Amino acid sequence: MQRSPSSSRSASFPQPLDRLAITLMIIFTIIIGIVLLTGSRIAPHVRYFTWQDKQVGADDTAFVLSFSRPMNQASVEKNLKIEPRLPGKTSWAGRRMAYTLTEPAPYGTEYKVQLQDAVDYFKQDGVVQASIQPFDASFRTRDRAFAYIGVQGEEEGRLVLFNLTKGERTILTPPDLVVNEFKPYSMSDRILIGATTRTEQMQGLPEQKLYRVSTGIHLNPPDQLDPQGNSSPLKLEAPQPAGKLEQILDSDTYQNLKFDLSADGKTIIVQRVNRNDPADFGPWILKEGEAPKPLKGQPGGDFLITPDSDSLAISQGQGLAILPLYPDAKPLDFLPKFGVVLNFSNDGALAAMVKFNGDRSRSLFLVTNQGTQKELLRTTGSIFSGEFDPTKRVLYCLLSELIPGETYQEKPFLAAIDLKTSKLTPLIPLPNQRDVQISLSPDGLAILYDQTIETTDPSTTLPQNRGGRAIADSRLWILPINTTDLTALQPEPLPISGLRPRWMP
Image (cartoon, rainbow, N blue to C red):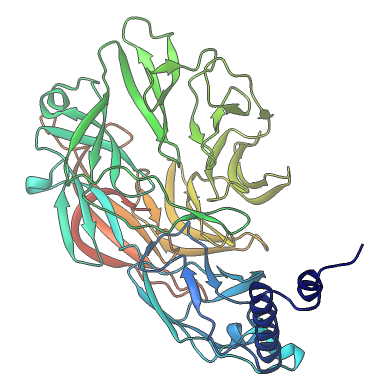
């Protein structure tokens, strides 16, 4: 069969559309070759910075820079500038660089981040490099702020928020309530308080109820990062003005005693005793959106919620139990050696625990989540409290020394214990009182404490100390910490009359 002339021409000569396609392929091939030989003329840039215009807290330990193209890592690390200086280390995953802080970022500080003169990756293949578009950004840490219970004037018995960064003081609770204890929420927007009315306080009635009060603080925190470096926004409560009060637990049938708040703010544990049956005594659990429930079968010992918000460390007879946070739970672990847990590190990897020895002395132990137990000190005095610094290198403790003599007397003092060497460094002596309260700032750079004066006035509506005595006056002090030299610290008085100061997270 003989082909027609037209079919022969179609096979030999491409149609117009085919010719156009072939032409474009040739052009694109030439362009790609030029780009590969000369490098892209489009400058790389920072696509996003996870701390851009955010307020950073102590739990925010790393930021991520994401680039539009693969970068020469050494050139980025060399040219990245943070002012004021913020020590850290870098790690890479493709086009993303994570910068992890090695020291906590001091609160109340604004930081500038700059990157210029960094180049892309292609220089390694002998190709012309492209310099990055200059990058400028900023972020700031949270304000330095703390809350305390007032003891004078219009602040008497009320919860007060003091912002050191701005020099602002705000009374949060109404005048008819006397606050006994409080715990801030992690976003600093609310505070959990235990309080009684002034009338009940004067009559000596154990009518403490639990309330939640707003602080007026509205943070703009960074997004949460997963292990792969992906970010997701935090779910925050709707902003509220300062002083909005909400009752969350009554005292009609049960007296409310000690309480603790989980780190995620979703769980409260409170020690309760039945008014009609004193044998009905133990911890109760309150979860968001659920009715209060007793943790049945658990004796009423001292307790502390673990930093992961999933478990409870509670004293049980001759030991310390770790319980999951739901009713009728069986212990996850039991530590028969220890009687009290003082505190956990922020990540839950370390715990400070007290052992009561047979010779009436006490031992302070460092216990890790790997099961290691290390005795830090043994004393015939008391071990009142302890707080880990953010780097987990130092444990700050409130201790006492037993004064020799016929009467039992203790001399309290604040000390720092090096967790690696177990070396104890006394920092400052404290007033001869057992109710001193200390609070370590989230950035680890200052300690707050109070110095109280008791009164025996039976009609007073003032807050009371642990021994039930009313507080006539109390001064607040701040101890700035120089981490390079703990032997030369000098406390500074604050112009505030207050009790039980506690730093906001």
